[in-house]
Length: 138
Image (cartoon, rainbow, N blue to C red; front, side):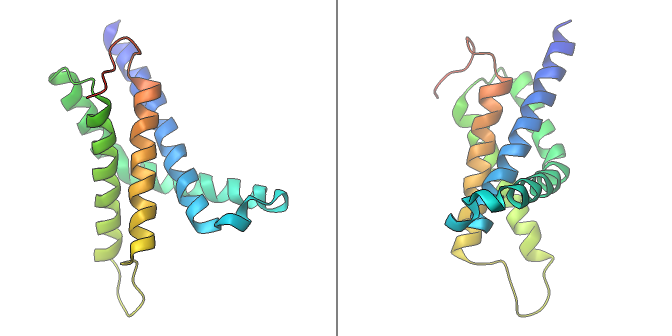
């Protein structure tokens, strides 16, 4: 029974983290004017598209991080936030390496968007997937 609960927690936490990462990415793209009521539908669609791409890339890394956390009983918020940031940086690096031509993603704004989405996704995973009585600050 414990394994089933852990799998359900991981699935819900991962889905919440992917949606959070997608929302942060969409907000970085939309900027301050993207929050206008008329653009909320397109912002929602952009969030879902970004969340799907984030989830496809991050699933193997997130599963590995969750397995390590289960194997070495790690319940630290810092661990999951650091894993979220590292997965986001890996996505940024993969995007940069796959580019060709003069246009590149390598700039501070894009890097900040990836780091912020990784941080938010890691924190959301902790809030959803790690039991409240087991989560520690460090």
